[in-house]
Image (cartoon, rainbow, N blue to C red; front, top):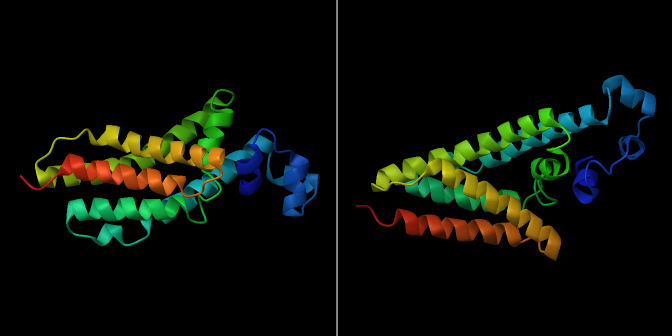
Length: 184
């Protein structure tokens, strides 16, 4: 379901296609879901759980120094965005583009998902900045992380260039290095 929704958009994906991919009848589909939007929410929740696991892995959380931990996270994030969970795109971003206006409840849930990811990055940035005696708006930087990630995914699709998200996050990490500078 993810692959189809990412390739053609969830609104253009039909229940018939979903049933064919899953090898189930429409009756079975409607036994489990009230409609396509319910499946979309379930798919989004499953995807978000996978994203949380992927971003949380990689050992970066075990790095003691806050600046090195942030650097390790950024390197890991570059791997995640070109790895199996996100290589075809970001389902949260795709749904946000396709459905935020038509489904306020879904938009609210996507906003919560993005906020959770932003807050992870913001916490890491705040710790790193504090350790270097710098003042950085960590929440704003967390939003910038998401903007670079999602924007790079769009560019990857537009240019058929799956390495675009990695480059975007590497450049963002370099900007962080400039902002943090050496210890004061």
